[in-house]
Structures are given as structure tokens and as C-alpha cells.
Length: 360
Image 1 (cartoon, rainbow, N blue to C red):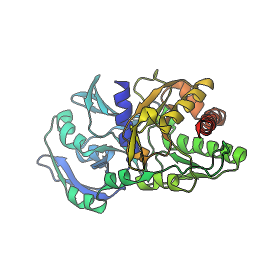
Image 2 (cartoon, rainbow, N blue to C red; image 1 turned 180 degrees about the horizontal axis):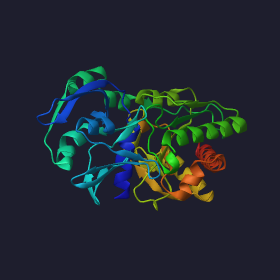
Image 3 (cartoon, rainbow, N blue to C red; image 1 turned 90 degrees about the vertical axis):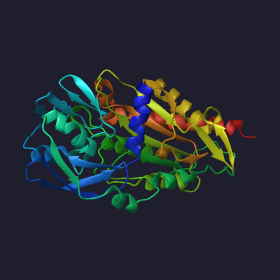
Image 4 (spheres, one colour; image 1 turned 90 degrees about the horizontal axis):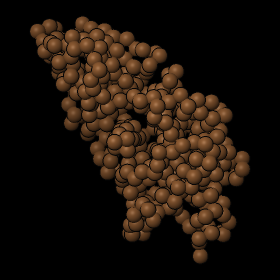
């Protein structure tokens, strides 16, 4: 079950589509509708700020800065909405959502289905809801995003020398800009942790090897899915690491996790993940993380757009749980992230060394 939740979370987290604004009307049935003109389109869904939704139906709630959830009272009981969670908690029970609430432009926003499906029942009042922007309008702006991503073939070029050295590295720190990713203890944001860790890994790699390190983003700004793969297309890149962190309702859940594509492709041939270099790289990283005292839940396979296609060794690394005190302490400090970055570097180096030893 934990594996399924992890893959679902990753799929929607890494597929951050470009944002298009829309306008909706909302009100209790029979009342004059209120216009909400700050509506965003992501992951094939419209997202509306929860504060705007509640205000339109004459209700209000508040953000719990300690537990990092949004609460409001309803006839059904206390309603709790957490960014990045697949469920809405209602008086101790859980209601599923097809899309997770998320922060966009520093406001917590809920998917349109929460408004149309759950809100009327929660407040026990029929509502009038009208979206003035059709799905067709926003879908036309970026057709075929998934098709274009899966069409990008990431190749690893053969080395012209026998040196067991990393030639170049591509890093993709997850989220950025309006997309905060998960939010953990003390309000720490996934996008901050991912970028800080990527910077430390880049620094170690450059200082020790003097090789290029390409980042999909080097600041707090949004990046399109295609732009995230661009560093991996650079000359002589030997590996791509995608960095993320997680959150869970269960604060005892901890540890890192690694994800690879289900199969590798090269020159028209396909091999399963178990025989591919991405899996070999993931195993070396797993060993290095555990040697550094960082537990891992395992190596998983998933056809995530962020992993691309091809034979370039590519691993998505979930660095830990921001909602777990032990993982949180490691992820928010320079010393903790240094430990993680060093372990990632060691895993990369061990992979390159073993790969060159096996070369004819």
C-alpha cells in the first residue's frame, strides 16, 4: 500500500504542468454568485483557493501553522485539508480526492472536484457552481504534454577514454516557484530541501572531479516538465538524479526511496529495469545511503514522465519524510544535507567505477 501511495504521489508531483488562469462563479443555491478569478489549471484539473471557496459560501477556516493543515467547521464535523494529501479528513473519517490540494502562488488550493462533489455535502447546502473557462480552452494551450515528454530519449554516450570518472552530471531538484511540493514540520517546503541538496551535491562533484553539473533550476522558480529533462540532454552527461522529499499523515513513516523507469531503451532495443544501468545506479546509491545511516524503503519501478526514456542512468531519489522528526532534522540542516549529498556522490562514483570495470 505504501508503494502504491508513493507512486501516485510521485506521478502528480513531478508532472507539474504549466498554469493557465480561469474564472468561476460560486454561491449557495438561490443566492447571487460570487466571481473567483484566481483559478489555476494543473494536472488536467482546475484549482481554487480554499479561502475563496469558503468565502463564497459564507464560511471561513484557518491555517494551522503547527500541524500545517487547513481547518474549517461544517455540519459534518471538523474538516481538515492537508497539502499533498490524497484525502480530506472529516470528523475522523477520510474522503478521497482525485487530485491533491497544493500551494500555488502561496495559497492553498483545492481541486474543482472538492467544490462540486464534497462541499455541498459538507455544508449540507446545495451550491451553484459554474466554470466560465472550459477544459478545451486550457488543454489547447499545451497539447500532448505527456506525449512530448515520453518522446524525449535520454541517451548515455560511450566514453572515449578508459578513465573511471564521472564526465558530467544532471540534477533535477523537484518543484519550485508556485509549486512548493510537500510541506513538513515547521513549514519547511519540499522545493527548498530539494534545491539545497542539489546545490550541495553539485558543489561536492565540481570540487572533487572538476566536471560540469547541470541543474534544471538553480533558484526558486517554476520549471516545465520538458525543461526538467533538458540538463540530461547535455553532452557527456553520465547520470540524472531527480531529488524530492515526502510527507505522510503517519509521522512515524521515515526513510529514503529510489525509483527507476521499468525499462531501458537503446538503439531500438529494450531491456527490463533489472538489467539496466538505472537499477545498477539505484543499488549503488541505496548502499551508500544506508552506509551513511540513512534508511531506505527500497527501489521501485514506475513509468514516471520525470524519468524520461532511454538508457541514461536515471534515478528519482525521495530523500526522506519532512513530516518525520528524524528525517526532518537531517533534511533542514546543512550538516544533514551534506551527509545525504556525500552519500549520493559516493553512490555515483561507485556506479561509474563498477561500470568501467565491466567495460571490454
